[in-house]
Each structure stands twice: as C-alpha cells, then as structure tokens.
Image (cartoon, rainbow, N blue to C red; front, side, top):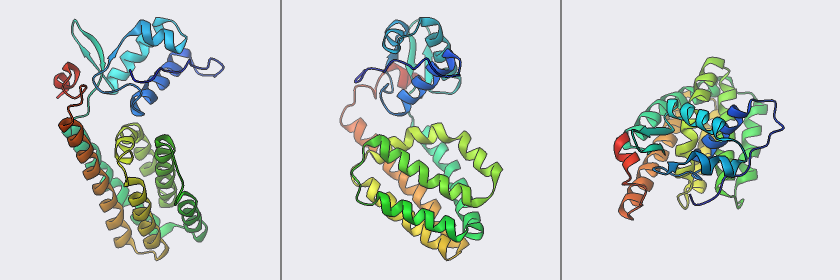
Amino acid sequence: MGRKLVPVKLDSYKPLREIVFESLREAIINGVLEPGERLMEIQLAEEMGVSRTPVREAIRKLELENFVVMIPRKGAYVAGVSHKDVADVFEIRSALEGLAAGLAAERATVQEIEEMERFLLYYEGQEMSLDQMVDSDTDFHALVYKASRNERLIQILANLREQIQRFRATSLSVPGRLKNAIDEHRGIVEALARHDVEEAQSLAMAHIVTAENVMFEALRLSREQGDPKEGSEANSEKE
C-alpha cells in the first residue's frame, strides 16, 4: 500500500459499516488501494481507527460491487481492471453521454450554457491535483446531464458513476489529457450553444472514445513497465 488510509470520521449520521465501505471504495477508485493489493482486515481496521467487523462487512459489499475479488484460501484482493471491464463501461457510457448531449442541445437554457462556459474558463490553465482533475471533469459532465432534463437518464448515469470514476482517474493521470479533455468539453459546449443536436451527440461520443483510448494506452504502458500488480494472482483470477 503506497499511502495509508486516513481514520474515518465517526460524527456522521450514517452507520459505521457504511462509512467504512465508502472510505474503502473511494480509496480503490483513487488508487490508494491498488489493483491486486491484498486487503488485510487488521491493518485496514488499525489505519481507519475502527474494529475489524465493519471492515469485514465493507469488503463483502465491495465484492458484490466488483471492486474486490475473493480468492479461496488466500483472502480478499482489490479487483484488477481488465480490457473487457474498460470496454464494457465505455461502450455504455458513450451511448448515454451522446444521448445526454443531444437532449441538452435541445433543452439547455442560456443560463446553463453560460454556466458551462464559466466553468471551462475557470479551469483552463489551473494547476490541479489528480483528485481536483477528476472532480472538475465529473462536475462538467453533471452540468450536461442536468441540461438534458431527463431524470431517468441522470439516474442511470449516477449508477455508473463509481465505475466511471475509477477509469476517469487513470485516464486523467496521463500527461496532457486534462488540457485535451477541456478542449473537447469546449467543443461540446459550442455545439450546445448552437442547439446542434447531431454535432453535440457526435462530439460527446467522440470525447468518450478518446478517453477510452487513453485508458487503454495507460494500461498498456503499465504492463510494458512491468507493474508488479499487473500480474498478480488477483488480476489473473478475475480475468
């Protein structure tokens, strides 16, 4: 484990098991807990300042959500990310993002377009950490979803959010990707401002395909550099 987990805050209204689950899931998404890393209940409990019981419950729930894989007689490991995992999520996301952008081109108000433009202006040229990059990218897409005026679509995208975040962090960590992503976002906003449905759809889908290609390239480079996690038993078991 490259970095230690921070102790959980116990002043939340949520049950402790839920707080621990969300903390571990966020650690996996942000790469604090890396693919192939073994999850040791005692160590995690000590770092988070809790007993082993909520950690054990959280690991079981993470397994149900495919963030963790259990290997008989070996224990729990952070699930690896296979080529198919990436392809499946991006295939779905491309279609949904295109739909959201097309609807937004029809329905976005002048105020919403202006909000997107201000958002892009603010983040252009900013020096950001990876967490800030992920947050800014997430926030921009949320503005497009909101402008679609389709609550069911927004909910479906929300259900995919955690899987998207895991890939988003890897993609945006590639040097130069953030600037290119902002440029792609600007093209989408310009299409929305013109109420050009087909162009908005096309640009939104192309944006996701580009992110997918960047993700695959990052995974390829990781393999070529001999990432010790890449060939772990957890990853091979999952794939």
